[in-house]
Length: 181
Image (cartoon, rainbow, N blue to C red; front, side, top):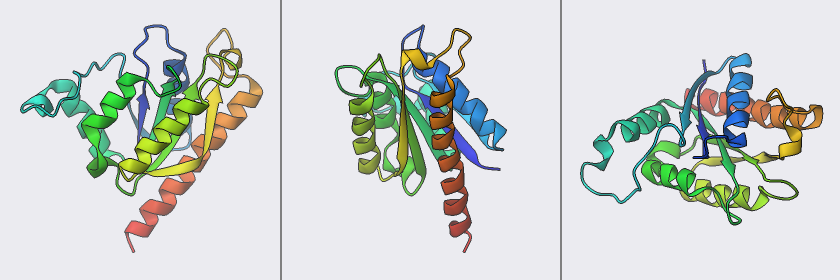
């Protein structure tokens, strides 16, 4: 069974990013993945400084444990000032390349409308490349209009998001199979 870590990168209490991340976890489970979930809004991390003892904090250990067990990642972010959230960047700083090397990573953004989200995804993609993750080509921005009142996605957004999820599962299976050769 594939081990996939979903990271919700919004610290906001009422977060569309979290709603979409929960849907992503559900869709991954439906495809047979064993999903772990880390939410920067609930699993609060200190500001990364590299200080001694920082790695002993419970939520840092939780994030690192989840990431070390993961074969792949689904990372979701809001867009703040044309970039990923500071909370998400902070979480990625706690991980680094030893957790991401040669692991598939899919990305999605919950935008504020219009084109909000594209810059955040480009920013996440740059960081993933920097920490040696295998950033997959498909990505999706979910606008507020794409979320229904009951927290589901409209048909078009759902189809796009499921495409990202399916690509992640397919690619992860291929990468995992190649490691046993």
